Image 1 (spheres, rainbow, N blue to C red):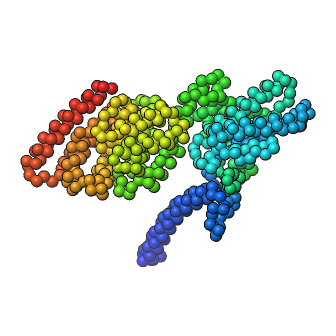
Image 2: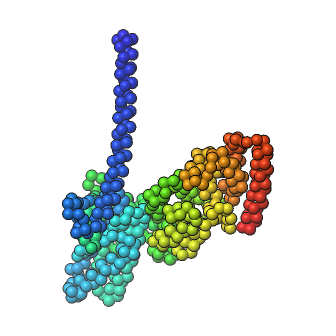
Image 3: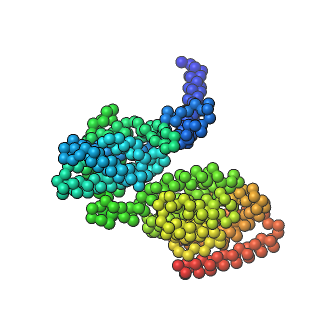
Length: 499
């Protein structure tokens, strides 16, 4: 091969590599677009499933009951009920059926308590699901709690019948978590038919369970093991998947219950649960902010909210606050700018109103909601934090002042104010920034260690960009800044002395 041929070959290889890279990028882009479209289709199908057929346009080609929804994480509760033959030998058949109906009615009531969707209640089978039709991250815990309560209820009934020397129904309970396909049908009341290997595995868990036990798959165990004591008791052969580990749920972990039986959640459990549930709440609020905030909010947007939530958690743990206080901080951070949907002015107040309306749906107590609204109002300028949580909140809200990305973040705030005709030139903005940074104080040890030094550097950097009309203007400005710094330090001391 000549040198010329060699160079030509290298050239062709480079061309092919470039084409391959371009194709890979195109493929990745198409994949992302497909995921977005699939998600939108699922949302639309979910909405369509709730619309009665007679309200849809005549030429609409999707029929309720035939549209399929996909849920990536659903937990199935499957209960096999046995014993009819034995019971009917010792009592009237109709009495036995009435007894079964009463028991199933109780199961339905318990399922609704934990916000489960009833899938099937036919004869000697009961099936419910968590995470349908509303997707959530807590459904494995919800379903296990429901199953444990059902098992407790049946155990009490069995003991009552045993005293009377009567036979009672035998239950085998199985639980599994995974993806399912759901068909929605019905007019006034929407019902769901679930299909997939997740459902099949749940039925196998029930079949492999001992009477009165709650048998969960390895899929569910991974998601609930930090809440419940579970004992491994064997494996279940599953087609195409090999052998699946099985666990019996015994009780809640000791620190999560105050009763010896270990079956009733305590306050520590509720906080732990709420911290997991927070991700569902956060998804709803961030989606609301992204869709409903005015377009000119280049700074006070959902990205800023995410930033403040993360910093509230970081500084909160740095200051050694409790898990419940972390929950309150993160929730306040999530809502602290939500009021911008209603008004730019007094947005803190409106954020409190939105929080008060939504948080009871997520089992926040009135006392927790009150503290959260106080934390939201603490972000009003000028700051006047009255306790450690309010100081953490204030530092989280303005954390960017001491970060290396201060300039680009600050520019988005300038653009936001400029779009509303609330700010003049960039030079004027820089002067305001110097004074604001000088007046600003971090109130927690964590924030001071992380950000204070950088904040001082920001001030020096901005000063170098300011154009002065003359030396006299510059001297007067420096004099004002010095006075602001003295006042700010004095005010910070007063606030911290009153802690």
